[in-house]
Image 1 (cartoon, rainbow, N blue to C red):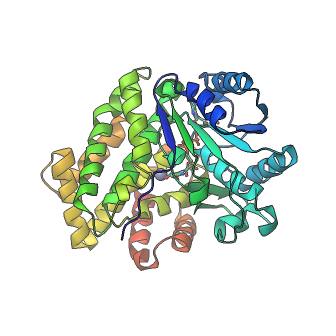
Image 2 (tube, helix red, strand yellow; image 1 turned 90 degrees about the vertical axis):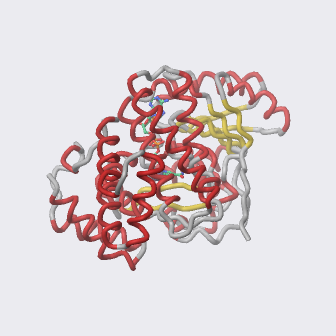
Image 3 (cartoon, rainbow, N blue to C red; image 1 turned 120 degrees about the vertical axis):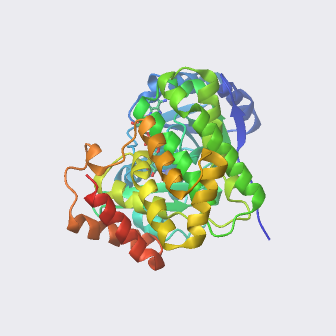
Length: 386
Ligand code: NZQ
Ligand code: ZN
């Protein structure tokens, strides 16, 4: 049996935030938290719009800012204390995937504080919850993760240099507000990284061993949309149609639609989390670095995988074989300004044998032991490719 449940109510389009009037009337809240990152929401209008709606509805609110890209367990801990001390009963997560990811952990641990000593304890063992999380409304401002409509949160522990995902179905935002105009201010690097993050979500869900035909076609259709708009939106950041198509694709690409009745393969993400845990690089750019090498190496080791790579190339990239599929992917990554070599990242100043071991250990801790040789070959190939 397959289970499929889309949780949020979606409000999509310019001015979508006005839905808050109806949402606030439907359910009474005493005190809201506006959760955000480094301040981009004050430049794109999202902050002002949310504040206006709260004021109109006479809902008291407090703010917590400073959620980092690749959110840290320590910052999340401070936010949990803040939420508890302020008696918050609604979280408005306004920002990119990092803010929305953090909101789910905050919402969950604020009502289950006694169950865990630290945020990291929860991330590594999320099964001891008793209370439902505080409700979340997401206002997404960066198209990429799909966090606005899924259960995932990825948390970074800088002390341990670890990055790990945790899933909490009950913390999925119950309302997702998606206004493509909020994404106009996302710079070229973050736009491309968000697009490639989504591209990778689609590939990782396609590359499971068994894929339901319907799901495969939905994945391919969404990859085509990304290919159609990716370069254009980077050159034309305020083009509504492109931003809207990209934003909706990124949501629909990671909310269980594109994994319906199918196996997934999250190994590129497993490897990337080791990179961003260690060097704090942008997630989508890290995926771009790893993906072509992973597909090439795994395809050459396993025939079924090779055939899936080739099928993807023929159906979506309109090329004729395995090698051309890898080349197409590399040229797409280059065209949208993302790196193909580690020394293109300003954060990575050296990459040697000990780094390979560290990345391998991280990947094996959270990934698939049976792919150890593949991981190692991918890491060594990336290390040597300068
Ligand atoms: O902090 P602010 O000032 O808001 O600036 C952010 C940040 O510097 C900026 N930004 C966001 N919206 C903007 C904007 N700048 C201008 N205009 C706007 N409208 O962009 C920078 C990056 O933001 P971040 O939220 O970190 O990016 P993203 O959405 O790519 O999220 C990345 C995080 O999500 C995790 C990643 O591992 C990473 O930690 N993931 C979450 C997933 C999930 N929940 O399902 C799945 C993904 O695979 C991913 O692992
Ligand atoms: Zn991702």
